[in-house]
Length: 430
Image (tube, rainbow, N blue to C red; front, side):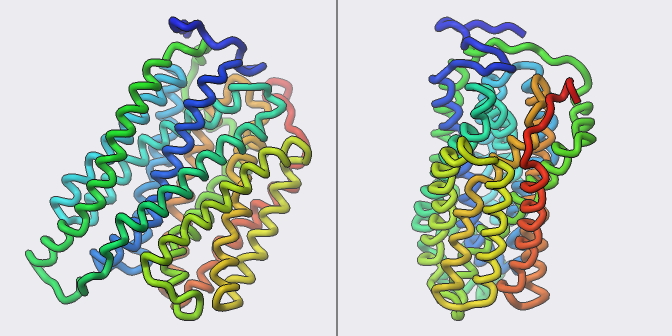
């Protein structure tokens, strides 16, 4: 597939990298947007938990619905990239995200939890498409030797979104939480109250839909900036890449990492509200969520530099060990130490996703988009690990004990960092 734009195609190729600084700006913007929207789930969960009187396992179905889209849409997204190219696929994903945001309108009108889950699924489907594009594209937009650092730097903009959005969301969405005891309402009165209380959520996502429409139009206008070679063959052959140990284990670690990160992020508000931790109100606890994601923001800027100097595998093993240590401290202490140890895990998370992604993708060459589709499928860990963590909290009666599951996820990532500390051979050579 050859595509030439009015301003000329980006120079370079998939093996040596495209020289397109303007496209890097667009891709960084995509990371910011889908990171911020994803982190809003951490604010919506306590809102819906209160309105629909859910337990932890039920409330965390928000993450199951959201991240379940990665299992279903990642391979189709990679197929779309094959057919129409990176930029057109990004525009399609943004339009799907906009549609998901608009579905919050009928969900609020119906006052049904299931429709909110469906709206989140559609929104996440669009994010999946955008992410399948963004991760390999940022790796291609520059020299291969600096791909680890470049992807980590791009993920810093993802973290910038995850830092800003929850803070604003906690003020806007959680500001009116628990003004009335929902358990005292029934029937029509309960449905009316739910519709009223979810109206602010609708307004928030309508504003996001407007922004997404604008960004989609800009990305579409740049759709011919890259020269791309069309890849032929059955898209499901991408799963054959799993027979490559470094790639297959890397996909498993993406599953575990996303699951652990999302599980902790989803429980922060409830965790900090506990009397033996910080005993905060819901809104005050919500304002602490950005510290978790902000740690990842700071860590990714630091990591982008560190990964140009140190072995990516060794750095990954070190931060995974740090996350395990912080979980142990948080679970076995109380007060400020417990609360802030949990929040500091965000700093350890900083380089995990981009480093696991780039370590797993090393040597894939022209099959980078296929590999990205398979890796994105593994993000479904965010749909599996959080409700399991919530179930562990329900049956044990302790959020502290439930942190054991994320700790086990980080242990596996530590082992992968040690395993992948050496460069991978090229796919053709292997």
